[in-house]
Length: 424
Image (cartoon, one colour):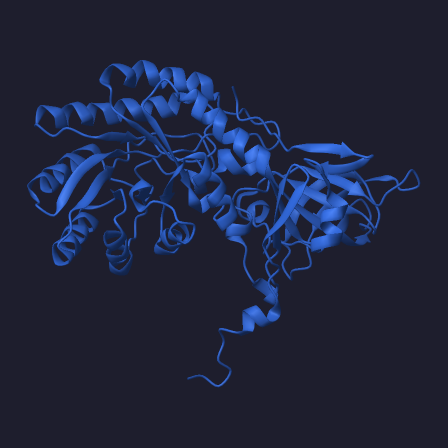
């Protein structure tokens, strides 16, 4: 079973809707730009992955960085997920929803002393360690706190995930993890440290992985280390294979989760080694969309394309500008037969030529049209900014016919509150 787009878009009384709520109703009620998420799709994507891993002793730790809204985190908590975090701020979000710290895996290459101390204080389940210096820092802070820090070493297997270079993490020129020899040395240090407890081994090679080949290649590299550790008398409590499961935005090949689960069961089942995975995008990307209103249609000059200028911008959804990412654009309403199909770039009001949501799209629309930018549930709102002093968008969660605002629209007063015109 692939991670197919399941946008939950339907027709409701001839109106385009998410689940049972018309998109125009959401725009009228909450304004635009506005991120809208389908609770049913979030649950479905989680349950599909859980089903694929069902034969294994597996635990899903949702990767908070993909979408960190408290309501989304609460939904995954209720489904039984643990969490993968990369900052003290993300840890605080899990604590805010009443999440169990013991079900948190703390990843990331740059954990500060304050972040480590907080994680030790609340009792996170495991630190994914990415360097010798970090291991020694965690050991020292645990000794000072008179705690025992559970640790896992993140291995960089030098495997090419065949994905965008910005989201590749498993090559030797990436900043993440350590090589096999260094990993073995770090486990030896940890085994001798009273303040450290070896829990597992970790590997994550990137995002938007379309086939199981690189994932299995990385797993086999990790298993070689597991065997080497066992020969030294070091037994692990889990193996963490990260996430990165590819989803379909346009015509990409999506990862076949059922096939991956079967292959993992073949390799890991006989070992009876508990599995941890850290999905993010695959659970949320196609569960969300961004609503935006057309402000102006600006004709092109000569043979150049025209522009549909909308009220969303790169500060709301930076993926097209940052990754050249493709998002499907659907015209919700505000057009008729009198409006010709045009080849347009969908651009925002920010003062940058790189401010675009889509390029060269054939669309029938008018200056009254409402647009939906699909597959915006991952790395949308969490990468949003206040560039050009723009307020961040509202967020809405739809569950059947139920609709809830899960983040109010940011105002200019919200932005100015932290600034000190006269200094301090």
